Length: 167
Image (cartoon, rainbow, N blue to C red; front, side):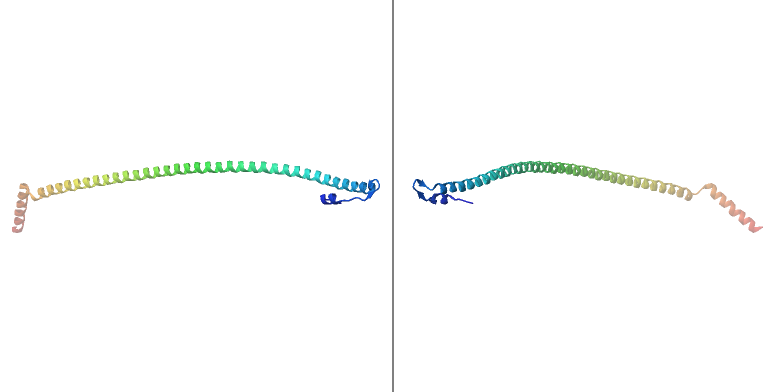
């Protein structure tokens, strides 16, 4: 049963000789006691429910704070990892560039060395050709120069041939 504030204010008891009817007042008091008891039970239940909800809210807030802290820590870790990865990538790139520069430098040095060797071989070839030509010219001059003994031998051979024919 429910009794509202308006019901209480508008409630009128019948009057008897000595005032309000005792039976009506007692009955109304019982109704009010029942309504107040129900209201107290509901209020007690509501207080328990409020305590449960406040406890749950507190727990959720703690979880939210923990999650927020975890998220911030994770974000900081991710940022730190990005920075470290960036540094490591830069070191790798620098090392690769240094190796590439070293390889190019070695290649240039080897190329210069090969050019020097080619020039040296060309000079050696030219010297050899000059020496060979000189030697060939010297031999040719020797062959072309007449040898006095050779002329005598040729003359004697020619006389022998003639004598052989005459005989």
